[in-house]
Amino acid sequence: MPAGITAEGAVLQVNTGTSESPTWTPVIERSQMQLAKTGERIDMTSFDGDGFREGRPGLRQINLNASGNYVPTDTGWDKVEDSWLDGVNVEIRCLWKLDDDSQTGWQFEATVTDVGENGNVGDKVEASLAFEGSGRPTRVTVPASS
Image 1 (tube, one colour):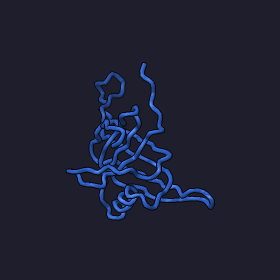
Image 2 (cartoon, rainbow, N blue to C red):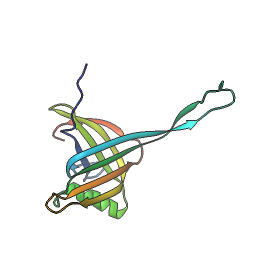
Image 3 (spheres, one colour):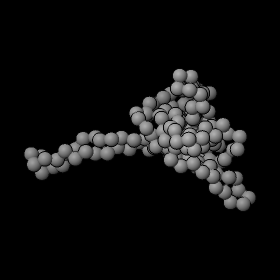
Image 4 (spheres, rainbow, N blue to C red):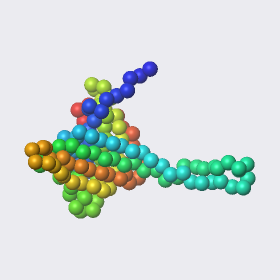
């Protein structure tokens, strides 16, 4: 049976290039990342259902929350912050280390719903991000150096 993968090599990237010529740039020194793929259920129950509920899949969405160390020179962070400020979506990739040679995860267009920094005296400043997917996500496997 295959072994599970660890979160140690997880990375959040934002496209700082164009859709035609993407440049995938890491965002924050990541310490936590949570990817949620959710869906709604449409109730299709009728009186002909023998007393059992019936349903079918409805709308689906992908969401991402991440936090890590704030790095003022992080161009990925700047792209996310600018996208929030300008009210435009970004392309992001959430990747998990598959092995020494590759990473696997999801790529999707997203709306930045939360971007912020916080910290206590004597600690590193923590950055937090939240994204809501827009449209259909794509499962990706890329070389580890991507």
